Image (tube, rainbow, N blue to C red; front, side, top):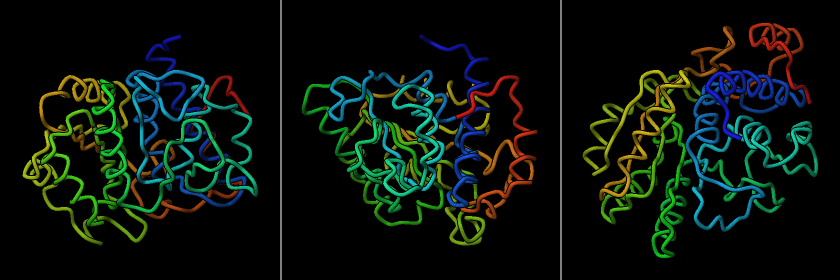
Length: 283
């Protein structure tokens, strides 16, 4: 059943609570980028992508999603669970021995929704392009979506993939870049500036869309819908999505300090008070 915008907004709060609870429970994981991308994942699975359950690896005539920056697995796992790919109760096993919910997504455990192991940064777009071309060869008109981090674009393989996609006119792919300006060692500008990313992607032959408010659910839905309308026109589509790392929790927002650090008991309590739900769906 399709959810209303208000239901999806409430779900973003629940997903943020899941993220924090998961990393707190094992004192390990990456909350910052996960919190910043919650609207993207909610929009993608709640309004944009065409998919069927139960999940199948082939996914013929279904849209596919490939997470390249796999360290933000908490938001991916919570989204998949909340949209019915696997039981919400399984989120309790995050990063524990023998869990299907490893710190970075993997495939050998058979977790529904995961089509590729990821987290070795810079590789996701290449994999997604292969999937997109496979769909074309198979007469499958559905789309392929990816998410990459902005710091991840410092990896050279991305630029080979950007060049390849335009050269081969892979126009059934929509690649979103989480542009929060932060990475593990500091701001992206200080570590290795991306310069004018919009102009660079256009120079590589991509159609580029940009959304300055990547933490506004309706704005995210709108830019993804716009991107969908531009597929099939001979160019791959990129979305530069400006988000705030740690969004929703004031002491985590806008700083690289929470890229890969879990909150303690007191910090978790503070965050939950900010992410209040009348009746949270606890796990």
